[in-house]
Structure formats: structure tokens, C-alpha cells
Amino acid sequence: MLLKEEIRKAPGDFGHILKAIRIKKGYTREQLSERASISTRYLSAIENEQREPSYDVLYRLFHSLGISADTVFYPGSDIADNSDAEQVKRLYMECSERDRLIIRAMLDTMLDNK
Image (cartoon, rainbow, N blue to C red; front, side):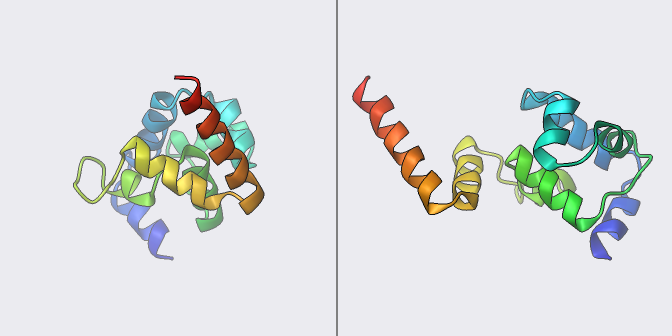
């Protein structure tokens, strides 16, 4: 599997990068593990380079953090688009149409109250 090969190419980096992003986003391990539907212990093992996550778990972690895979696999490069607007857009696109309507209504209300 390509992603596992990429993880093996960067020992000591993947989990630590993921942890740094989690902390920067203000999530505890418990919060992120709940959002990604994995155990806190498993997340800890991933962050400490003791376990290699499956593609499905990687997807859920990236989605839960609102980041692209490039953010982790190419940290500090121009490939990774970490702007708040891009992260919000990625999360928005994952929402159902009903949730998108709610988000747009919330934004309209927020802007009307400025």
C-alpha cells in the first residue's frame, strides 16, 4: 500500500507531524480520536510511531483535522495548502446539503450582526 510505504520512508516524522497539527488545531487526543472513531490508545500509538494507520484511519484523521494528506506527507512545502479558507472549504464539501444550508444561514447571520 503506497501510504504505508510513504510512512515507512519518514520514520519518526509522520506521527509527530500529526500530533503537532492536532495540538495546533487545539484538539486533545480524546477529542480527535472521538471525531475519527478510533481509540485514544490507538491515536497515541500512531503519534508515537508505534502503529501504522490504515488508509481508512488516515482518511478519518485528515478529515477530522480538516487537512489534506499533503499537509502531513509534505510538511513545509508549497504542495500543502494549509490556509484556513481551504480547510473550511474541504470540511464544507464533506457536509450534507442540509448541513451546508445550516452553515450558510449561520454565516449570513454572523455577517448581518457585524
